[in-house]
Image (cartoon, rainbow, N blue to C red):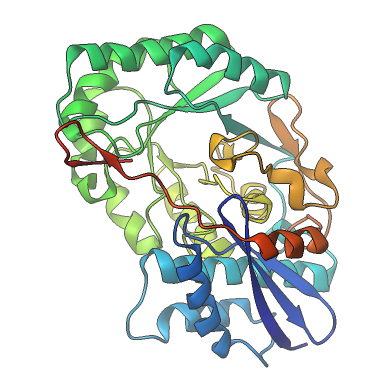
Length: 381
């Protein structure tokens, strides 16, 4: 079997899909994208395709090594995301060629159900209860919300109180038997995170995500010592090398993104690295159905898996839903807060190619907002 073509599709709301075709008619799908830089990743995929056309798609590890290491300049979000989508598609082909789901090729399943969570915004306390009620009605038992909007390095007592009030509203709507994760989104300085985290302890968040920017990861030991809330980080880490300095930081959860951190091959290794340090895995995935399917294949084969993000009903999607590009949407049905183990070959989904091609004719130009503080200085989004 040989690879004959790689084709990319820019589809709403902000995604990039990849189709790899073989000479035996087996097709694999992947999702290589950096949100807001989809065209850039598309160009990287096109360049990397020169290393793949005519090759055996089943030599996944050799391809991963070549794609990541044969160039003198390596790594970073664009190249790692391009490799991630290619890697997903190659694993999809491998599973389909052997007639088994990918997790069977990763050592077999260690669970039958994988817990998932969805987004509920979080910028307005008045909207929290309604958004949470909708997610609970859909079968979720866990949600994630923003901790704040734009934030000064050391903000006012009023802003601190507003952050706590939002989470209090979420906890009241959820009750004690459901979970809320809080995304600080890198908007908090170390000082502001250290001030706010202890105030959130009585509300028992599942975790606080990205309490500081990745470049300030050296502050994580201070924050883990300041609060008993589990801290999570990793959506902007792209390799084992990026995660290695975090192992002794005290964080409880690693969040590699299957569409950014080198795909199934690398995230599988990151998960094993985390397990050695008693760190749980909760893959980041505010993306499309292919990225979610790839994440779930890793989840079902990973002993230290905690919970999986899904973009069902996500505010960034702008009316385009996660399930619109699938032939059979039941694979992502949520019952009692979890999805069942997929049994179909490959990534376990059937992509609606006609819908993808139609959407690609329209394309998208999604960019994240650029925020400013009242004084005109750039604010973290």
